[in-house]
Image 1 (spheres, rainbow, N blue to C red):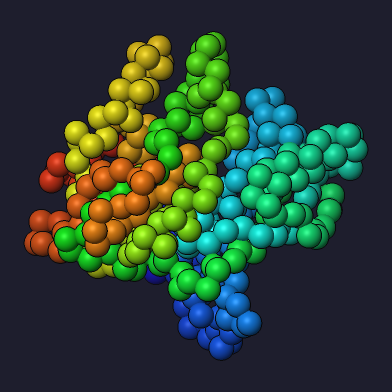
Image 2 (tube, rainbow, N blue to C red):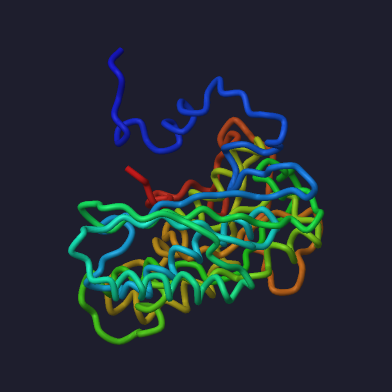
Amino acid sequence: MADGTLATDGEFAVIDRLIAGRRQPPIVTVGPGDDAAVLAGAGAVAVSTDVLVEGRHFRLDWSTPYDVGRKAIAQNAADIEAMGGRATAFVVGFGAPGETETARAVALADGLWDEATLLGAGIVGGDMVAAPQWVVSVTVLGDLEGRPPVLRSGARPGHVVAVTGQLGWSAAGHVLWHNMIDGFEELRRRHLVPAPPYGQGAVAARAGATSMTDVSDGLLADLGHIAAASGVHVDLAVEMLRADVDALGPVADAADVDAWHWVLGGGEDHALVATFAAHPPPGWRIIGQVHGPTREFGAGAVTLDGAAWAGSAGWQSY
């Protein structure tokens, strides 16, 4: 059988092929497959990388360079939060056409630094190169503060599913920008610069979170990664997500969109979703339950009130 393409095979199938058979050195205690890798040493370090490409992850006719810088840091810091740690340092690669005004690169750096400063972190290095369009690649280093990492594989039947942060806001903002619908400035802004619930990853870890991830691709898609890694079925409750949908109701009416699609399938909010054996800590709210796999819903399934969701589960990289 002929090889597929990146688009036909899909991001996660391609990643599986890229890492298959690779042997990590002893310093790597958690390798590819979770929100961040973990390196052992005097203290464990969590590491993750994201790449933002102009036209795919941001538009410079919507976002300022400053916005792009803040977004690049926020989405990387969220990966460290999802491991139960805190971001401490960032390394940034930047590609752009040679005719790009230097002031725009400085504005990008201002955004990077301002978002990193919110975390008490810094930009500790990087590289620049000529490219046909803007590309921002960020590697984040994080401190687990002596705790073991919170992986995607720890959810068990009987655990509750809880979330902190907003759901569907970035997707709603994208529709507002795309359809040139004025108003709703907070949502329009949230699409350009996400607002991860900084500090809540460590709160969840200290409270005994058994698994965790950030909502980067979509709530259903990201919970699907937890369900698959843990060998469980996750069921979300309509009533426990009703407030999220209602909060977006006026925007959904203006855009003629069902807000459930944003809440369940919208990505880039970088809210945190986790499972707990007991009640979650303050700042978190229960939205579902973990079950064992059944003939109807096997390991990796995510349902809504016991039924499969017919809409999109979330973002696809290709």
